Image (cartoon, rainbow, N blue to C red):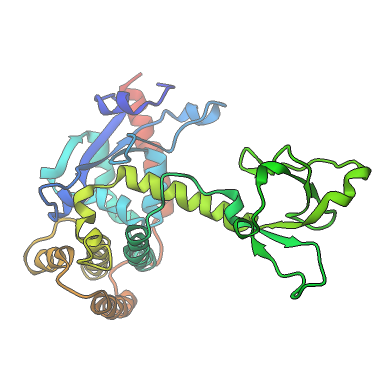
Length: 361
C-alpha cells in the first residue's frame, strides 16, 4: 500500500491492526450531541521508509474526529507519554472496534512505555486545556466577521509637516481622509514597512492584500504628501486569527458553545472538564501504574458537573493547582521508571512490523 488514504484505512485495510472509540464515548462523559471520536493504528512495511515517497505519520478525516497513526508514530508519541496516545494501550474491550494479534503483542508490553515523564506531559496538556477554556471564550465574545482583515486597518499616515502643530503625529489611514485608489506608494530605503505616498490619481495603494510599491518620476516628487507606515506583524497575526477562528467556527459542535454565547459561562466548560480528566488520569498512573480511561462514580459526577458549568472558573483553577501539587508529590514515589524502556520499544516495533510483513507477504 503506497497511497495512504483515510477511506481505505477506514474500510478495513489489512494494514490496520487496531481501532477504538476514544474521546467522550471512551471516558463516559458523552452527551446526546457529542461527536464520536475514533483512533486507529496501521503498519507501514519497513522498506517504505527507505523510499523517497512520503510516508504519513497520521491520516484523518476532514474534521479530525477519526485518526489513524502509523505504528512508528504511535510508538514515538507513546514513549513521549502523550496522553491521547498512551490511553490507546488501556482502553476497555467494549470500546475496541478492531483488534488483532499484533496489537495484543503490543499491549502485552505496554508497561515499557510508562515512566515518570507522565507528570510533565499530562500536566502540560491539562494546562493547555485551561488556556483554551479562556482563549476560545474570547472568540465567543469577540467573533471575527466573515470578511478577512483589511491591510489599511493596520496602516498609519504621517502627513508632510506644516506650520500647524503638532508635527509628525500619525493618524490611522481611515482617519486621513485619503482615497487609496488615488495614491501611489514608494518604499523608503533602509526603513522596513515605510512608504512615501504620492497623490497621482493611481494606480492604487493596495494590490492582492499588500502595499503596491512602484517608482515615481522625478518631476512628480512634489506630489509626495507624507509617509505611510504598515504594521505588518499585527496584520499577519490578524489574518492568522481570522483563519483560525473560522476554521474553529465551521467545525465546532454548536451545542457545546450555547451557554457561552448566551453569557451563562465565561469559559469553555468542556476544556475545563478535560483539564481535570487529565489530572485524574495522571493520578492513577502515578499511584497504580496505568491511566484512567473510563470514568465512573464520584470522578465522573465531578467531571459532568464541570461540563454543566456548576463551578466558577476561579474555583476550578484553584482546585487544578492543588491537584497539580499533589501529583508532583506523588511523582517522587510513583511505581514507574524515570524513562521508558526504549530498547524494548524499538525491538517491539521491529518485531511487530516484521511479523505483519511475513503474514501479508
